[in-house]
Length: 488
Image (cartoon, rainbow, N blue to C red; front, side, top):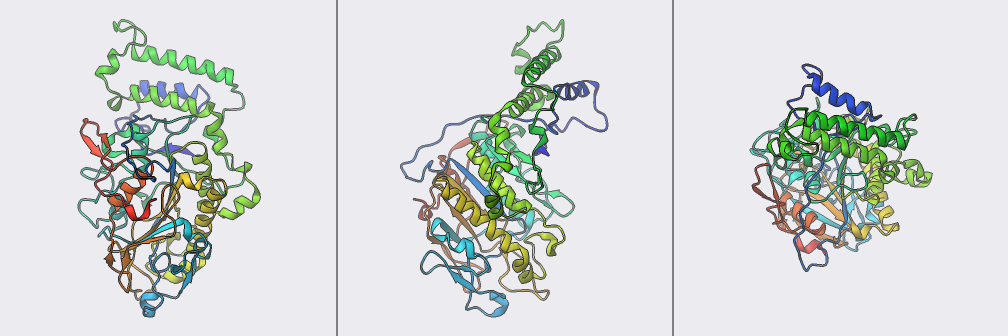
């Protein structure tokens, strides 16, 4: 299923109270042989700032490897093998491709690629709630107030996500947007969707595409990207022309005094506040999508060898990572792959391991993450794409230093780890140090704003690069600083 993050104007009620005019507009799209669940939207391009650093603009694209629930620092990038068992946990540490650098023993495949990575061991949000700490990691902006669970998008917490900023910075092309999120949105139990996943103050036209899909299903395809069997390209073009004529009649009805194609009405009714303006743009993009061969081919996972698909893992998250690689090859600038709940597994199949922590890590969490992360890095490297594609292992926070009475670890935003590779990142680097319990930073702490600044620096945009909100007020990409020690 292809959808967007709430891209339809909130004033339009779809099941109760839909007007006849709205029914005609939506029906008009169906008549064209299109069935996109929600229509598509555009963006404004802004030029990049300049820098003399070699890493500036090194990355053409970025893949965010997003682990819902928070991957624990102790068993991943910052093991403490000499600590007491209630701190260390059940697992030890293993050597990596970088002499003197160790990571958790349940990540043997990633250990072989540590020379491609920068490991950050002192990331801090000071936030102990999934949705508010997640907001900070998704946007680079702290939630107001901190440590608030089950919050949703509302003022003043309307900072744009990394994916939305990318849509505002780069134009869509070849029927694909500049940023895509898959295979599901991030939400607490009960489908309470976290804030910081849309465009917020930048306006809904910059929302990233959200692809709700399961690429691991047999015969996976996105039917919304395919033409119905009875619709040839010629018929599609004719239907597009018909829709445009009908739409012009809606915009400029007889007697309105406006000539066909006049921009006068649009001037008084801006796109952001009218369904009409949104519809015109979104319908055009829907056509571009179904008629673009590059877009359709990007989703053709059957073109991959069985060996490649096995390498990523034959589960939803693994195949989503493979799809992410295909999307960046097709020209998408940012792909965010969200961990989705594993059905039937402990802790709701997420990294929120308040109980049975070690067993969950050993039985499914780290084997899956290690397989998919290493496969993605190695595949990009083999294809000569890693130098221009940044990959970021990231989540909302880490876990408490001490294992609790239920054999779990609880929320911890005071110090945790992430990893970054490719696209301008200096491989074989460890930056930041935590204390003996991996509980607090000892040196070189970084904030989510610093991570945001570093990602966009490598994409060719300085932290002070300005976007504009819906009232034309300037909004800098980040108020953090580029982490110079981890870039080339």
